[in-house]
Length: 480
Image (cartoon, rainbow, N blue to C red; front, side, top):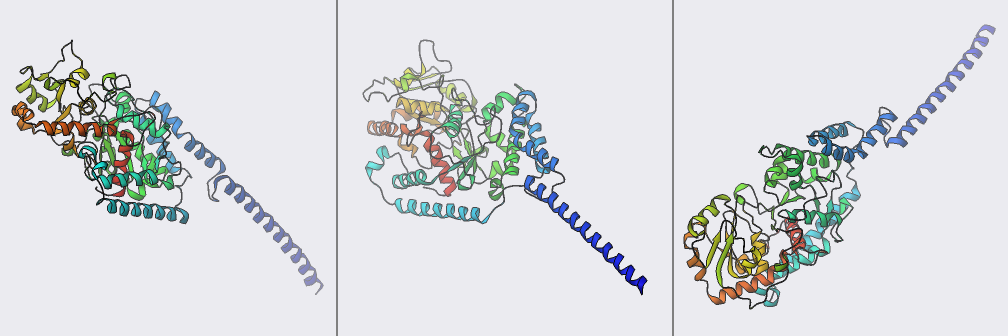
């Protein structure tokens, strides 16, 4: 009995010690887990050091892309490498919380109200709202524009290196591209939002013009680096953020005035087929879809500004002794046809391949009634906008060109469209335009000019706002 009693006492002491040791171990585990959770936001990382390493990599992603662009002959690979590490890190995309769902619902409700207001206004209008008859539906346009000013919010992705993203050419032939990127990034406009959950559309501010300058090997005709860079950029934002994946990019847009932008956009199938592409090269026979894509005006800013002779509307009574005018290189089959029939063959319909040295383009436009605007290798031409500035009626000679802002503007009110097959009869066609129609076309050009002007700072109804309005209509999924 004494033995049992003595043994029972030793067992109790042993169990007590084991219990204390277990409590110490449990408290230690809890302390370690708490420390890790406070560092990483999750109790299950492999180690604290790996979490810190992943965090540093995410923060430095843009710096590595910038360095890669400068030092690496193939910066897209550097982006892809970072993306691979990024996906394997402990980082996870922003969760879609109930508050975000409610915000999305609020955005869609606002869009629905805007559609209803625009449809209601479509049947309302008067002549004062439609000077020169330049709008397809003036009431619908003004209401849509008003709704855009009230509601539209654009989120600009901040990812990417400054050399190829957040920057673009602001002078010469691709100025439309650089000026829009510059305004969205650094302008004092009210459309940009820093809250991606409040945005209606998302802008990917890469510059195809700069890609061509820095990534393309001259005379190689290899556009794969452009497509690869676009592919990697879309992969970056779709991995880091939830917004691309929820719509397959349908509420995202890119913008470029370079001829090769449509090819570059093929770097991602959803970008090419689903996203809004704002392009100067708006060729409907090469994949441009006016239901979702936007035709961007091409403007040539010599040294960053419009020619001084075209900066202000010309006097209404300016002398125009010549019937028509064009000068330009032999680019494409349309110009070849034009030159075959009219190159230096008529003193009133003056067509040159090389502008004589004693002439300058703006002055000759101001002295002509009609300005020929033949497509070159690609459909767009800066001469269209220059003709409008000069109030020299644009004569559109193109195939498959979707005219800028044609979802809103009635191009027949300020331009002539001539079939390519009618080029041999071009002089007769121009001479047959009645004086009253010609004066109406001039009135239309004067009224529409403001929509094709690039201003700093931007002004209501100017080209920057018209681009946004076209994007706004695609987001509304509404035709005026």
